Image (spheres, rainbow, N blue to C red):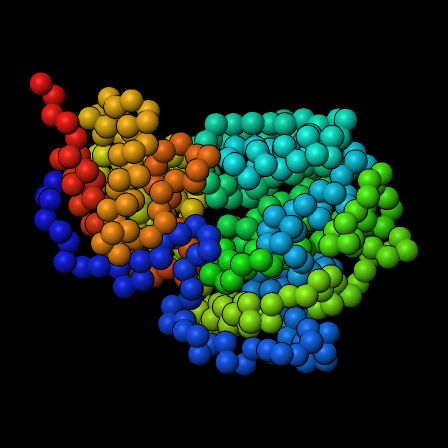
Length: 390
């Protein structure tokens, strides 16, 4: 492997898994129509918020019977709204195979302290046994494990005649993977993931079954104002028409509208998925030809096409102590950041040491191709710096 520095650089070195790269060609001029200095409750403010909801439905192909709301606190806020507002009516099953699933399991068992909870766990790079999910239970899961690079292959394991609700954190899957809407009752995501929007806003999508739960079940716990989705036992429909619970950023909203317009211009969901798949294939082809690196997810059917997680398998690195292995991988990421060819690609803090490369649709394939050359360079440079055996 040559130590020569590559001559081709990614034009956009943004491979962070959140906030993610802006759409191709983005600039601040895209936000010139933002409704600044005006109330979000004004006629034009509500219209812009409703436009974001309508475009979300169109691009994601959300069924007309599902409600879509803009809520506070990013994807985390949207998930917590669902957990605190809906859980407790039935036994609960939580799937945890990466850090965010672990977080939802902790919230349900330690904060909500629900009495009948089953947590199905798997190691990073694997999935729990989906056949063990009881359709009589409410199930909470991440569609795409952002910190492990593992996604569910489909929703066939969710019963069509289930009695419980399926609550899906889909923040790194929406706009990059095909969701099976009839199998999903609650879906959440955030603007700063697959379309590269700005942070702090979440999206909450509810099926008719989820609405029925909200209107028929009063949770035995206090709910903060920002979690309240009902009034007088009925769904607060305004939340799903652009009347947000708290004040949204109209600047961030304008950015999301711009990203949705771009998504439509490239063919909607089909075009978005194709771009993410093409980017992920570049990485997969490189991994197949590169002996020092491997996917964290061993099963190709489970590998994410957005948050690609990799581990260093070179024998000389494997001999190092765990702390030294982690430092080695961090050194690769640091070398690439120093050269301004890749930012923020170290593995998530709770994940095994490795690299995490965002390959969603807002990333250009040519930039991923250039990145692989630099990954080889950084590895060779870091390996040369290892102490030589006596």
